[in-house]
Image (cartoon, rainbow, N blue to C red; front, side):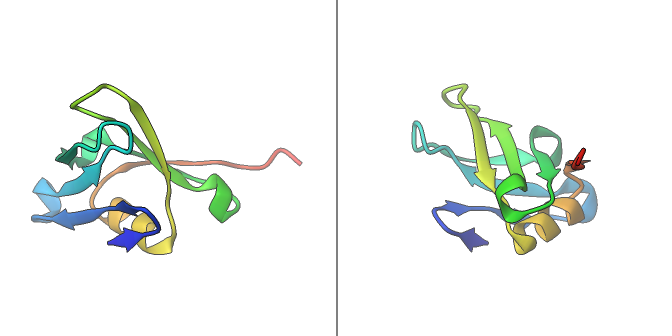
Length: 87
């Protein structure tokens, strides 16, 4: 799934889903298990994102997640944190 300047795709059965990801720092491309990713769902597109640590260079990567990315990640078993407004 391509959304902006990053790519997330999933493959495998529900028990063994892996996601293709890329690091904007070192330009590494790799596959990550659902447990290596985190998804935060906020009140807006600006506060909804996923994150992971690059296995090649160790950089903490944070990327925006639109509706389709959220669907892929949640369907693939990625741990999700729902952010709530305190207003």
